[in-house]
Image 1 (cartoon, rainbow, N blue to C red):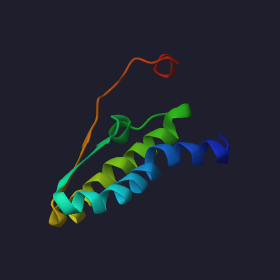
Image 2 (cartoon, rainbow, N blue to C red; image 1 turned 90 degrees about the vertical axis):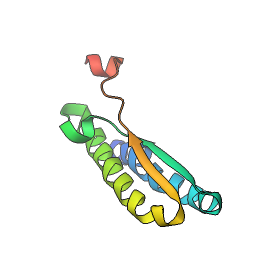
Image 3 (tube, helix red, strand yellow; image 1 turned 135 degrees about the vertical axis):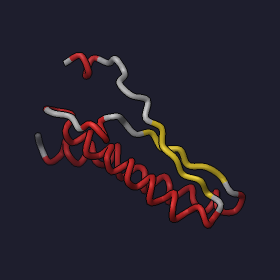
Length: 94
């Protein structure tokens, strides 16, 4: 896979969590609130082929969610993640 593909997957699935949480935290800190990230079962089970980088990025989401939860609870911001499991899509069929 190309460097561009790897960067796009990491930006979309991992770096976006940092960007959005960082942007929302000052607002949420004033009133308390919640951050809910979406991760994947691939974070725990891994994946092969074209989904390997995706699985790694989702592992990052799971880990950063736990870190943000510990870091932000003192500011009255709760951080959790949901993992919907396998969703039937054309990518999954491959």
